[in-house]
Length: 172
Image 1 (cartoon, rainbow, N blue to C red):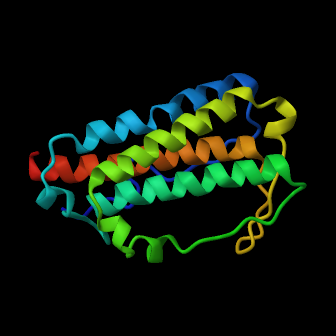
Image 2: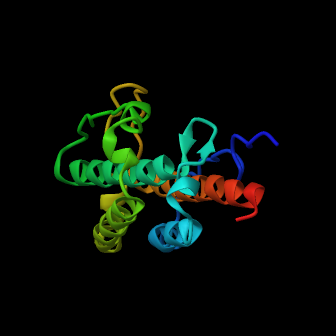
Image 3: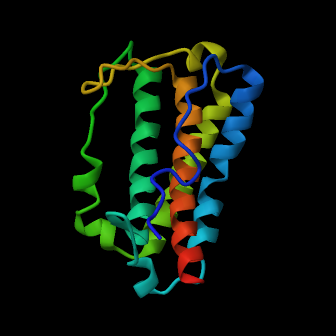
């Protein structure tokens, strides 16, 4: 069977984000580290190197850690600078670097640490903070910080579902 491009469906932006919805998204985002720990639990090194389209399960975990680390940094730039232009990165190239082949515990530990700091930051932010923006140099987008919450909760669920799809197909 061919892997689905979007196992949980494509991302559907949410605007505007109410304070109640924002709190729900922060709670969901906080579940990212345990969600990934669970979905890779018990997999052998060989299984972690199984592909989902172009990336292995191992690379997917490291990608999510890298992506969420970049988003956390973008939040900090937007909170400390006036509408900064953030640094884009080539996620495909990053997935080919040696650290994307490292032990899965490194990616899981990074996810846990980044999300602990990000969660602490998110829960302390005000409505004014969530309205801050940054400029993406490639897309030209200028998202509000609260608009990133549904994107990154979707991102985490999307990649966890890819791993679960491989597990289900292989009967693991």
